[in-house]
Every structure is written in structure tokens, then in C-alpha cells.
Length: 300
Image (cartoon, rainbow, N blue to C red):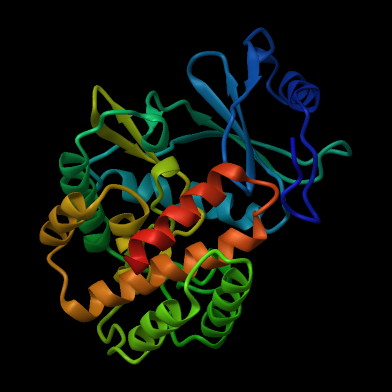
């Protein structure tokens, strides 16, 4: 497996087997297999038919999973699609120095690997889920910031603005986008009125690989590392990172957002894609392909 981060920890199957057998011996007879994924922060293994084991690859992911375990049980009751349910927490050892987690296995295939989906139906179903999330009570919730990759902060946040501009230039130098068009969009978006009311719960990373389908319909949303309270525009990412113009219109109609929020969402899609593209250019071909497609949709 190609290493994606300089500080990434290797997690072979034998290590996970040892952790399970030692800490959860009642699962020692269950088959264990690595799950192929384009995810970047965690290694996923299937345990038996009903469980998934999730271990951080990088130290920064530890707090993301802990946040999921704290808040997903609270939010799940208010959301119309399945969400990951944590069932056990493994402890750190000399072999693996971080906490790790066991979840219920969610049946389904991610959108990126599901052909012939009705993307208009999917867009409407997803919009309904997003709106339900945005209505959830935020009392005591973590705010957007370093703990969720800054997803949901204002676009004018110093780090977000600087990284986006630098990565637009880097992508242009690599021949991966039109610099002038991308910068025009970014500058227009940061000049647009910011979200001025109370922040809402945001998923922050709604991509095709984080959405599961069954029988051709959306069934679950996974990977809540970007969960926090912030600007809802960041959850408009699916308008540009999956589907086409027709499904994008259906998604916008179902989301019922104003022009300023829509433009900020478009800028979020650009920002995420241009930051991911050069970083994973030689280590994660699936993510690179998705980022290229998003940029093309955003700038079309």
C-alpha cells in the first residue's frame, strides 16, 4: 500500500488480529480482512459479517474518531439514514500506541462504486439528510476549526484562504486547472457575504466514498471526521463532486439555499479539491481522479 502521509503508521492485518484476539477474545474466531478504501486517515478491516474495525493511520485522526463516538449516538436518532454505530473501544498497546474502535458493519456499496444510480433521486435523498443534520441541536457541540480540518469556517479564514490560493497556483503549474478562472471564482466567493446566523451541524466531507447505497437508493452516511458546527455551505460539496448538471439543480432545489450560500459551497468544492489534488497526486489515484472531476465541474 502506498504511503500517503509522512507520519503514517503501517497497520498490517496481523497487527489487527493480535489486537482483537488479545482484547476481545470472544471475537477471535471471526474472519478478518482489510477493506479496500481511498480513505486517508484510518485503516478499515471487516471482522466477521457484522463488524468493522477502524484504526487511525495518523495521530491527528485519533480525536476525530473519539468525536464520532461521542456525538453519533446523539445525532443518529434524528437522521433519516444509517450512521456508523460504535460498539467497542480498543486500548493502546506497545504494538499500536493509539485507541482504536469497533463499529457495526453497514451493508451497502459506496456511490463511487455503484453504477447506474439515479443521481437525481440520490441528490434529493442526500439533501433531505443534510437538512435534517442542519436542524439538530448544537448544544455543547464542537465548533469548526483545527479539529475538523477547518470545514465550516469562513472562507476568509487566513489558513483556508492562503492554502487555497497556493494550491490553485500549484495545480495550475502542474497543468491541472486554469489559474485565472479558478482565482476569479475564489475571489468572488470570499467577497460574498459570510454565514451570519448561528452555525449548524455539518458533516464536512460529503463525498461519493462516504455515501452508501442499497438497491439503488442512498442508505447510509459514513466518516464523520469533519463533524462540527459551522457554515452549512460546506455540505454543498456533493453538488460538484458527484452527479451532473441535472442532479446539481435537483440538489439545489431540495437544499433551498440562497445565492451566497451556493457560491460559498462552490468555493468549498474548489478549495477541497485543489488542496487534495497535489498532496495525493502520487499516492491516492482514486482521490486524485475525484478531485480532477470536481475541479472540472466547479469551473465548467
